[in-house]
Image (cartoon, rainbow, N blue to C red; front, side, top):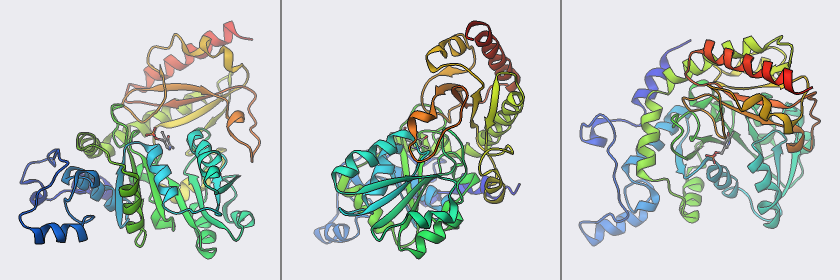
Length: 391
Ligand SMILES: *Cc1c(COP(=O)(O)O)cnc(C)c1O
């Protein structure tokens, strides 16, 4: 694998002039920025997106991280948001108006489904959910009002990999936008803009921050959409703090090495689950049999540490017997941090356009930076306990 990205991730958003020769961009705390003259203030008003103007539009600390993400994704501009969900909402709001129709992949992060089904509906935007595996077949779901298509690559619970290139081609031909949530792969393993997407969204809360201590979202816009993105961030009054931007940029510096280890550990844990007597199947884009595996091979340069296993039997209400005594996998939401997490889920309750085939519950695993042998032992012990208690 080329090391180019590993180098770029260290340099991105940097420059000695930007930070007075300090190795990291300093934290600029500011609401007010003062101007030396009225003429400068007037210039600032005309160029508020290109310079340090007022705290709500960000300080040099946020600008450095925005520049880094724009460069890593090959976009024209990036904006930070106070959470991944805020980034998703702002990205969609910047493109839709009443009367529009949007297409949302059936396997997306559940709060995105809720946004589409409640707030957007109230504002006169109708939503249809579609099978993320449909590829160019997405064309059949378009109406004259279809404004955008939203998809996760891959779905962050069930890991179907969508064909971004095929969907981007259809969206472009129909005058619609394609929005891709790229949180799983990070900008290091996949760049949706290069495949024709219009916006890329990251829940930086996950791998970019990487230490389970900051909420942050990022939208990267392709050339031509940067004004629209900045205007929406400004109008919604969404700002991510300079302290959070500092921590996220610090996280980004080590993303390449962390991700390599997350990838390796997850592959080892996933391999140990293949053929386990209690495991129906392993859902991991790097594993054959996971829907869209060939697309992962074609488009991605790596896999991160998040995947799922589907159990052969069991009920959601009995999952305590499996997870309660685990010692390395902790129980909790979010993912992408240094620590391993496990989360039982029932995808059938979170989709409407596709059927979910699961003899038992799904366990989503965020594989951390621990020794994978310890993680495998922890999982095998948990499955063993569950096998004895729940029939
Ligand atoms: C967590 C997550 C989000 C939302 O991010 P928050 O920072 O928790 O708001 C969006 N998309 C995906 C794929 C996620 O996993």
